[in-house]
Image 1 (cartoon, one colour):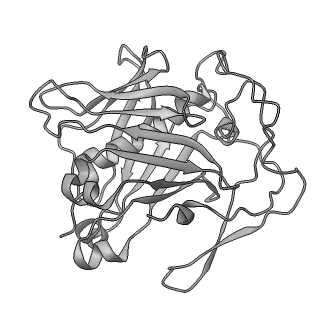
Image 2 (image 1 turned 180 degrees about the horizontal axis):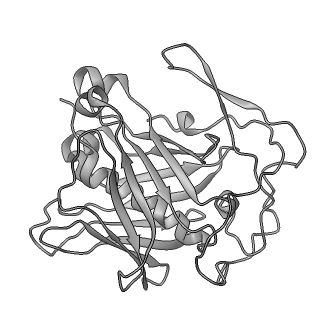
Length: 292
């Protein structure tokens, strides 16, 4: 995929938004952050009208997709993650690639990441070579670059090559989340289980923070598939990652999936970014089918 295609033309930013009502979460969610560097510029001034990003490829012609107005970056928040401080859910829409639908040729995945109002927060673009994509399939290693509305890479996901089989407790799946790029903020690792999909969310020191547990059979018809995010003792559900049903034809003939992520409003913003990485890992592990 051309590097220039991953650059997003950023609109001017608009008024600040307040997040949805909060609910019970973790205390001191911002502990441990580094202060943004002095040369870090806010994505834009507050008070300007919201502008829209034209999107092509829609069946009815070009559409207008609004970007979420950038809130002022709070103190001790990693640059680029200020958007996550005001929301408690994310919507991830994978873009459909015509080449994959017609001939089954695997292309770099691209995703729109939106808030509950449908405003775009980030744009994610996979960066792997053609040989890796088409030889390794869903098990492929990849780098996922997540850009904000200024076209800046604010989050990087690194997935190494691992065994695709769950029958052996070795070479299990994992993904590293960096924010900003080059600075690890957490990891998602597969926990071996003979029947259930299980993952563990870790912080930058590889200390376990949360668990993710999926259903025994990761398939459905006309319904969503939920992966629950739980406390370490797995007694309390604190969020979930859901694969949304997108319709029979789209499910059968494409691998363009829609996901939703829910988490406490006051959850550590770095853990919100790690949950976003967990969603992409779940997509590749269970739903990135080949359309040949």
